Length: 195
Image 1 (tube, rainbow, N blue to C red):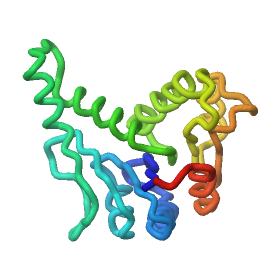
Image 2 (image 1 turned 90 degrees about the vertical axis):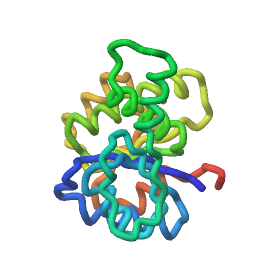
Image 3 (image 1 turned 45 degrees about the vertical axis):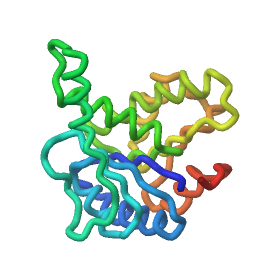
């Protein structure tokens, strides 16, 4: 099963319809979705019946709808075990769990979709862009995993592209309007072998 990582504003302000359409499209196409545990995006995608994998970095229960049938990966306990085994000093379980969550979501995703958001969205987007730019693009991977920026203001999008030296010839980053969810899903998954 192909998987897309989805991130964006935790309150889903102005994107509820697009998130719901994304969930429905992914359900139809049997594409899995990787998400964090908080915010409305998790709940909306869960309500569509799409295959949602929640990567949990906190002890609190994730924000999933009643009757949720997806998967929950409790990565907070993995961080706690790592800290106990390594006897790390000064490391916090929360930060370790967040880093493990990001690495796991990244490693198990075939493409990435980012709606505009705040610090949390950027905390996920910036490392993903760096991982792909340095680990795939610069190493000559024939088709680096793609990153879709949906409904991002031009100034913010342009700053990110400049920061990572992403030019017009870098076809692994795309910018889309919020009404283009069908096109976004196709662009992210075209040319990928079905798993």
